[in-house]
Amino acid sequence: MATINYLTTIQFGFGELKAIAAGLEDLKVSRPLIVTDRGLAATDIVEQLRAAAPALGNAAIFADTPTNPTEEAVEAALAVYRENGCDSLVAIGGGSPIDLAKGVALLAGHDGPLETYAAILGGIPKITAKVAPVIAVPTTAGTGSEVGRAALITLKDGRKLGFISGHLIPKLAICDPELTLGLPAGLTAATGMDAVTHCIETYLSPRDNPVAESIALDGLKRAVAHIERAVADGSDREARKEMLMAALQGGLTFQKGLGAVHALSHPLGGLKDVSLHHGTLNAVLLPAVLRFNAPSAEAKYAEIRRTLGLAPDADLAAWIAGLTARLGLPATLTQMGVPRSVIPAIAEAATKDHSSASNPRQASAADYASMLEASFG
Ligand SMILES: [Zn+2]
Image: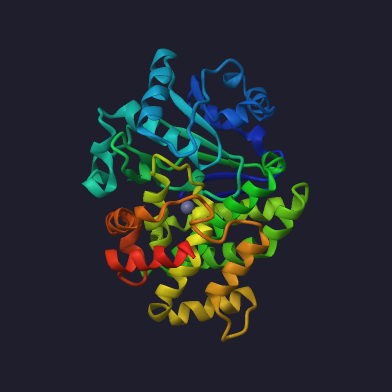
């Protein structure tokens, strides 16, 4: 167990869910809205949460978080928040409930519409300390959203946009590996590859932040050492703990910015006709992006190879593709059911995504289209 104060307060360790009672008291809030999804609401995890603090016993709940959070869902949850006179949010689940809660927290203290606050539309300085307090309790090991300053939300017109502000960082993150023990193998693999991608992309980002870089490399090392164990045996407590730490570390380095993988997976995740898992998308896109970025980040690729214990001439992209295959994840966008017809629109959207600016090699729409082509197999 450890208390870490870097960006925000984190309670990490088996059984730490109980820390939520003191967390609510410290924040001086008493009427939280629980935000989760239908899958989790059907398990006993929400009951465990309710039992962990008096204020949560009969707290209002919003359990209709979609696979990828939408503006409609933010508005629906905000209505529940207001009807119940809530003063805070407790998000429990993967990245989607946590991002949704951030959206609700934003609009609870700021006038809409949501679009006003999108990073790409100049919204960052409009987000103030009026954001309602959020406590995040991840039940997957991947998103890092529990310590991240961003929320990714699909607007009514289909654009999946980033909302970014230090005010959106949850006031408390409770990382209890106990809650990840029941995560199915497929989701363990997909969310784990999201963590791997966060560590790689933030490390490769050209922004100067050696502290974040060392966290990213350590998180990467931890993730690749334990992801196969966690997928093979979900009850492996050591592997679960290490994966949750790696995911947290990925989130702690977001401040450096992500890269082309996320610039592509954000608009793909916003597609209306096909529901695509963010982590799986990242795993599929990562090899093509690594090949594209290679000429612009040679020294960092060498450091990643050293960190992973690979030979100096190892093909990093091929190694990642091999890992993804061993985890049983799809190898191509075709296997995920993405139609090739989306290539031009997604390539164009990627150039406008906030993550594109911190990719180590500048990518045009044509470059993004090539990376997509390669990812279709
Ligand atoms: Zn991600």
